[in-house]
Amino acid sequence: MDMKEILAKCDHTLLKQTARWSEIKKLCDEGIDNGCASVCIPPSYVRNAADYIRDKETKLKICTVIGFPNGYNTTKIKAMETEDAILNGADEIDMVINLGWVKDRRYDDIMDEIIAVKEACHGRTLKVIVETCLLSQEEKIQMCNVVTKSGADYIKTSTGFSTDGATPQDIALFKANVGKNVKIKAAGGISSLEDADLMLKLGASRLGTSRIVALFKKLKSGKPYKTHNARLMAGIGYFYNSFRTSGSNLYFL
Image (cartoon, rainbow, N blue to C red; front, side):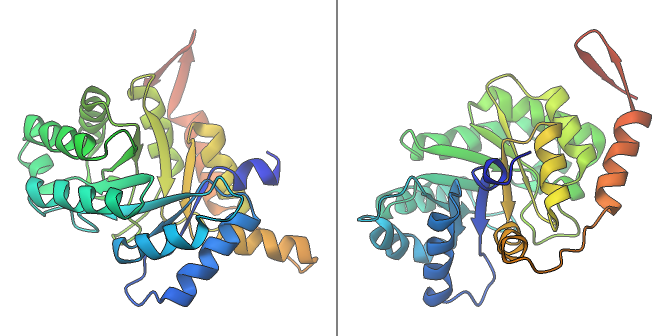
């Protein structure tokens, strides 16, 4: 895939606890210069970032996180956080579900919460983080169904703050189980251009990453770029060994 196509699908991300305004401003500049889809930043910087890019000629969106990273805020608080973020200038919201509710099979409550946050988005894009590394295969499929029925725009793999991030297996699983109106965001652990390309080929529409812009700059400067093939090989092996194709349908083994 063309490098510009990859960058155009990146949510250029900085969510570390010690993030400073100077770093957020640099992130915005990099997002604009490289044609990224959005910058994904802490809620406390949304107004600053929205004001900073307002007069610049850019399609860059401001994305922020809700209930992050653990997801166990109450629904009312998540909705209030979302309202505040939209008021401050957020274009996109990435919310974390209540993972304890998943374990208790409280799927209706999860759906109601997503719907409440979606209403608080007032038409802006909503991505639902399900933290795949903490879920069983059955739970991942259940979350595909819940997110589809909720009317959210995206299902997102990970916060990047748990035990693992996006995997090729999970992207392929999402692609086979979400509704046609739900897009997929792969996030966490995307550490190479090969990772990014593979995630997109498997069905992701967005990439949450803090590394791709830096890798592209290194590539453009002519500096040596060491490829990371472990995830790529795992993805290819999984795709051939764990799936079989019948017509246009994928069957999970």
